[in-house]
Image 1 (cartoon, rainbow, N blue to C red):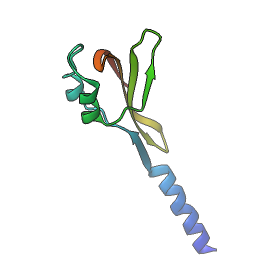
Image 2 (tube, rainbow, N blue to C red):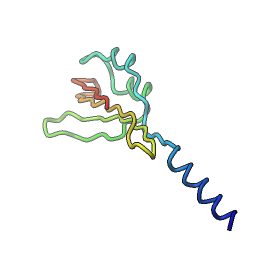
Image 3 (cartoon, rainbow, N blue to C red):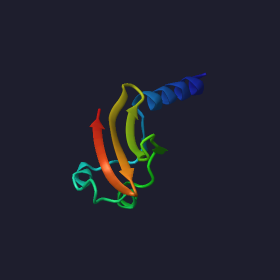
Image 4 (cartoon, helix red, strand yellow):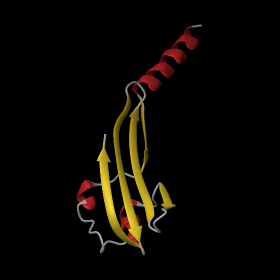
Length: 100
């Protein structure tokens, strides 16, 4: 009985105190170097890895999204950064970055 109670308390402590992260961490210093019309998507992939999603848009451009989320079980999302890039012909046309 004591072992089961200890196991339950240990598991609860892990769940309440643990955290998990996923995605690609997007460094703002690298984002500041993005130049529309100059920076290639291949350059971004070498810095940030493969995008979380890539989707063709109606205007012929492609929307790329890199996302990083860090979550603590007890408090929910503690950090999130989303880089959204619109590109044509393999070059960045426009981009936004949002933090939570």
